[in-house]
Image (cartoon, rainbow, N blue to C red; front, side):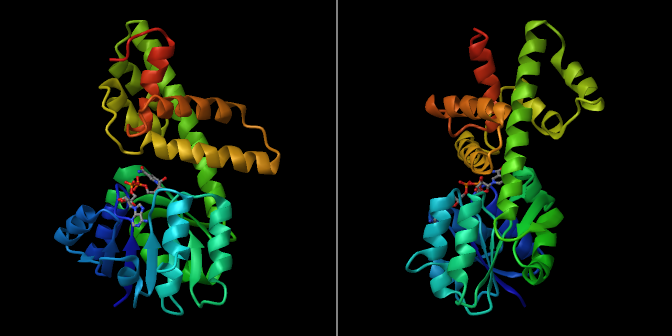
Length: 294
Ligand code: NAD
């Protein structure tokens, strides 16, 4: 039986680890706040009380953590993944982090016998629950093949996009498109409401035409109801747009709409709304339009 060490049992990690348990893998889960480990255990998983305990003896280690410093601490730290994983283990790093962080992990793993892939995901909490995530994988072809059966359980679309770091570069592009689309959907909803149009009917017909998109399908109902429970937190998307801007600058690419939406996300974060779903961009559009957010 394949043994998996899973670190980071948050909004995404908990259902992803749960899907591996359901598929018959032996999964040891660790999270910094222990309540989440208890939830994982009550869903049939095996609890671990440290990174070292989760990783020891694992064939595959998966990390699903908030940001680059968290991943560097957990993977490269004194009692972290590389210090404890068996030679031959495969680390699948699935958080959204800087492409440079992904490349650094691969470099640091050289000589330890641990193989590394960057495999960030898109599809949100529902995609994690349903096992239909889109997974963009960077690393060596043979390691991608070795990760295949695990990734196929977590995702519906799994694509090897290039060498170490390439998965994270594609994920940055994903976050640029998602943020821009949410902002346009938010602007359209406020625009329609201010014209007194029945927004539910409007969203239905828009979704069937060229303006149709996944944000309209998945997020518009919550936006109309002003339900901003995450989902995907503003603070994480703010982090991701920082990655996008740095990577664009590095490549000499200009992303004017990306820069604008990064500023809007930064405003939500600065106003103390980092814990809301990123679709809360809607309330900022209302505020900018001189309307009291509902
Ligand atoms: P989350 O904050 O809900 O989960 C992260 C978990 O990691 C938390 O439970 C936290 O306690 C734990 N953690 C933090 N530091 C730790 C450490 N040092 N050791 C052990 N555990 C630690 O975040 P999430 O929404 O699950 O997102 C995880 C990653 O996936 C992020 O990089 C995010 O950008 C990305 N992502 C999220 C979504 C989404 O819709 N939520 C979608 C795609 C990608």
